[in-house]
Image (cartoon, rainbow over all chains, first blue to last red; front, side):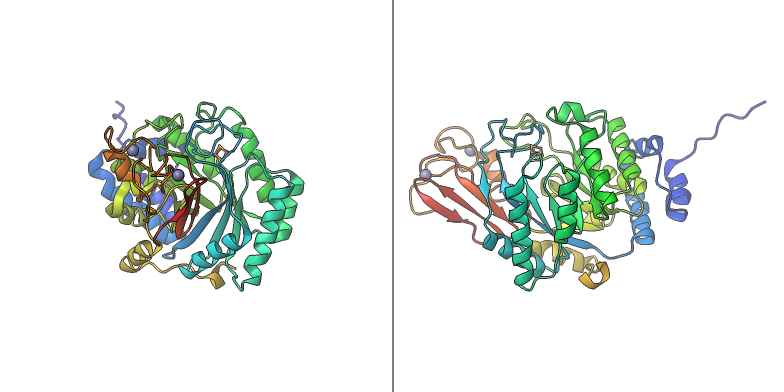
Length: 338
Length: 69
Ligand code: SF4
Ligand SMILES: [Zn+2]
Ligand SMILES: [Zn+2]
């Protein structure tokens, strides 16, 4: 007689596999976590937090971001208010060098160690790269030694090399969503093109920052797929955004991801990526409010973007810094990241 | 948030007349997660620059407004 197969609990398995051994969950396991009932969310978050403490430590990496070139992008990412293909109210704008220096100074003043310069483009042209070069030079001349990251779209090998030479230490390029869902979200370029840029960044020795947006009509299966595709990339950082339905975009009427669902996602992504810097990025204000942000920080997240985003506003930086103090989570210092 | 000196006729979020329709949803986003995108006086789309600690929004006719912080 054979016994009925024993029901194995995914969190029990994760405790051994992820917490003890540091091995991220498989796609099937992530899916099981995403299907956990609401009652088990506290248990999930507690485990995700323990995993983060064990494999990353208590420090929180704080980052500020700024849009160097806003709007008018030729691509058609359906979530994006900066695409020139949709009737979004966002108009094109360029930030000048003094504005960039000031933004970097404001970011450093919060204790942040990362400053990410972002442009709404398919990929950078000569003008944009020279603006970035001049900007970085001016930030250094201002006596600001904050680490500089960039997010300028898809790159050629020459452009990768140029950014390394400028001293850019990390590059953000989001895969946005699962490979199987990507063609529904973007039609002007492919997931594979993004993947290629990410591989070049890694090979050149820059840190890889790659995440995406939750709530773009993907299934739970695709969310799990996305988590393990990210894990396969082994990114240094994964920024998790929750969709902000922006007017004029194809997703303007999509529902905001509900708090419990978002928390399950945070926990599941931490269990898939035990060692990665998992960052709260855009949309958390809308999805979570204040309470949820705290729950996320106690549920596997170990990095935040403070202050405003690119076209949307965040809560004042001080509010997040106060939250970290309240949670007794130290902010990662510059010296320790070098 | 400053609103300039002129009359506040149009909704900064959706650009429609404030006296018409329901702008409750607009109000829940404006100043919380969105800077104004439309000029309150003439409803022109403004050029908006968001920075880590604030924003500026410029109407080609009515000039610049900026966040308080
Ligand atoms: S490439 Fe970037 S800026 Fe352009 S539409 Fe896509 S997400 Fe927006
Ligand atoms: Zn309105
Ligand atoms: Zn005006």
